[in-house]
Image (cartoon, rainbow, N blue to C red):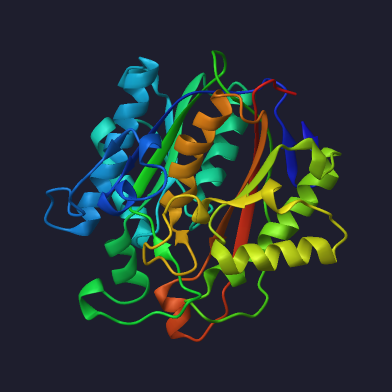
Length: 336
């Protein structure tokens, strides 16, 4: 089951039987509104804080996934997930509502695939027959913590990205109908010395490339094996850096084969600068848009490489560089 040093092969092929995705009003005006199960017209979600609104996003995504799968709350044996807010508070408070055994995760914007990789590992090894995993973010809550409150009106450079208001979850089972999780590569922390918190894409690109290279080598496949390789949220800047690094390292990849979740969710004209970001970015795009396309037969083999910048307000205040990570998970219709 362990292939090489970093990669797991899931011989029992855990199945994604259902997903739930929820977004806010800005996402409703984007490119893929039809791929959300629920969209809100109020960024507050009728709560009295943005953090409480994010809690509701997670709760609703879980409820949608369970409704679609006809799974009851007591059938879910574990929840694995997290977010960007201090001590993953919105997720912890949301899961309190369900009373499900809980493993809280923090991988910044890589959390969605960290959760899917660990969830698949547990199901593959018969540690669970049914679990749920997911991630979320809220634009205003994240801006307030990591940058400036939106009320401040601070200007941003072209390299910055727009945090998604959304949550995406998946239900994994040991059997059933749906796309199968066939392998996962756990990334290393890569720090190239960048310090600009407004250029997350550039900081995360080397970690994405390192994980892609490791995955291909340890799984024993080349780029042509996958119909689509999708990074988490590198945006315009980070995707270009990643493409340059892949070519520099001897990988010939077609630009249409190498896409980014941060460039799929919003329309041209929306003021997102370099693209989307946030733990909810890859969670909503993968569990909504990409799996819907896969089920329609547009592609059969998908490699998702979710990227995360492991900085915090504390490290920024202490003038530290930005360590980054990327986790890769392969999702296939036909299995191994």
